[in-house]
Image: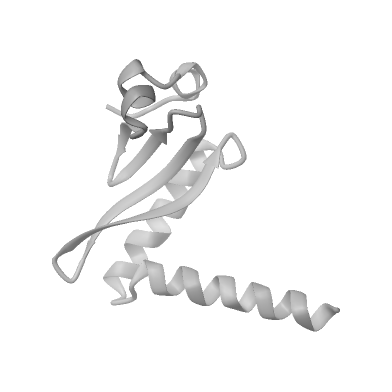
Length: 106
């Protein structure tokens, strides 16, 4: 079942998440999940398989990243996989590029 904005806004960590310090996981479909941590932080996670192994990639936090943006980013991740690119490697490369740009501005 797909998530909607009203559901997401109303999500709170369950007692189980608070006691175990493990996030509650809510699926939107196509590997997109919203993890509600015991602190109340809501993180968008893309779950996928790379070379036969289950992987997860944090793509943002709610409400900074909207449901629509998270779905779009999840599709981009799926396209990378189809193109033979590991999404984690792509994220690291992008982060390094951003760091290099910040340093060159100074």
